[in-house]
Amino acid sequence: MDRLKCWGRVATLRVKPLLTRTGLLAALVFSPSILHAQDLSQFDELNSYDNHAVISQYGNSLNASISQQGLSNRAIVSQTGFSTQIDVNQIGSSNRVTAFQSGAEIEAAILQSGFNNVVVSSQQGSYLNLDIEQQGNDNLASVLQVGNESSVTIYQNGTGHGVSVIQYGQGQSAQVTQGYISN
Image (cartoon, rainbow, N blue to C red):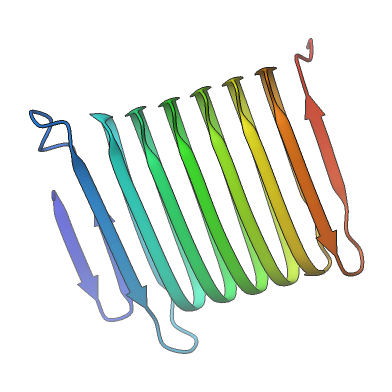
C-alpha cells in the first residue's frame, strides 16, 4: 500500500501497484462513520493486473471512488446511509462492478471502457440516481431501484449488450441507449 490515512471520521485509501511481479493486488476498505460525519474512501489502481477493490461504508455523507486500469479488475461497493455517492471508472478488459446502496439521496456514476464489462447495481431508498456508460464489447448492465424519485440513465456502445432495469415507486424514469450513436 502506498498510504493509508485515517483522521477522525475521514478514511482515505490509495493503492499503487507494488506487487506487479506476482500480478496480484487486493484492497479492502471498511469505513464506518458516525451520524453527520463525512466518510471518503478511494481506491486507485493503474496499470496493473487482476486487481480487487472492496469498499463498505455505513453512515452519512458517504463518498466512494474507485478508478482501475488494467486487466481483470473487479470492484464491489456497499453503502448504507444518508447522502451516499459512488463514482467508479474502470478502463481495461474483463472489469466488473457490483454496487449496493440503501438510504436517502443516493447517487452512483459508473463508466467502463474495454472488453466484457458487467455492472450490477441495487439502489433502495429515496431520491435515487444512477448513470452508467459502457463502451466496448459484451457489456451488461442490470439495475434495481426501489423507492421514490428514481432515475436511471444507461448508455452502452459496442456489440453484444444486454440491459435490465427494474424500478418500483413513484417518479421513476429510465433512459437506455444501446449501439453506436453518430455525433
